[in-house]
Length: 397
Image (cartoon, rainbow, N blue to C red; front, top):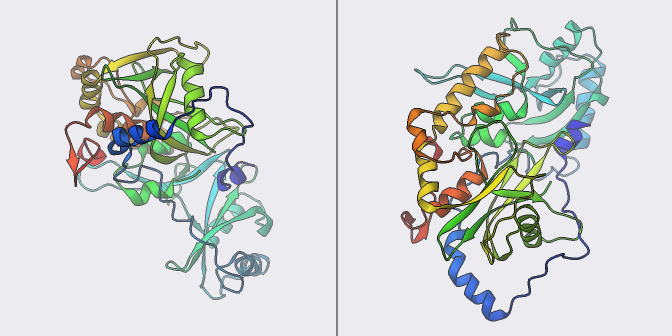
């Protein structure tokens, strides 16, 4: 079931009415647009976007189309035919208990291991099944998509009840890794690697801004990462627009009334509850109409207004690149059997003595929250081609 949830782009939910309507006149819309367009421009793709498998499906009759690929796959598996035409090649991504297969290659110099998805050839997959005493069947594989450039068809397979954990002695250095862990360990500055992790639900995430006092509203959710504050977020409800969801979620969680809502950017996000493993985070700037905070303690641990200077300090002192390096090395140890059943979410932020100068820590550059926060915090400093942009690229940290 997880694979099918992984594959399907969940449709937008529908809502029949809005709990908090905010009608706007034409003049107010014009004023809002003129005040906020520079803040809504996104100059680059976020992490986990650019999924290479989300292209158009080939037309029927094309050897890479689902029907033709399935027929070829069935022939190769049922006949155990390893001598048939190598075109197209088949690449399979196994999952075990919701965790995709991952592989690592050695980094250059003092760089940490480089982690990516562990695609297998059909013969390699067959060998794993035979070694486990299981039978490989065409019914077990799910068609993902194809690539004419690679002349390859991509599949997924759930091996939870058929293949045990891969031992630390497997020659290919493969292991099943939780998506949250893989998210931290993968090099965020490598767009190709991050694109391979792209999956897509619909969740709004918003940076609420007090324009008059030059402050931003950040919240701390109940989790173990010390001093981690981030943007508010929440799921849309049936019949609800994204803008209505931003206003409703902000009101419900903090008691802040929001008027103007401006789109910033979006990001696929592979971390969610097990019941909803795929999300599309749609990011907004939301401008506050009230300022008194009433925290919903069932959702949040805390919420506060932070000045632009406080937010800049948090962005300056967080050792994001150090966190990625630490996570990559710990995943390597885990896959060698040195560390068991460890989630590395706590490695998102690595504290140092210098960071005591910052009152809070914010998510790293792999998260859309970082880009919402940083584009506001430094909007008065950096200008590229006449528009405001983020302060730093993740590779510069």
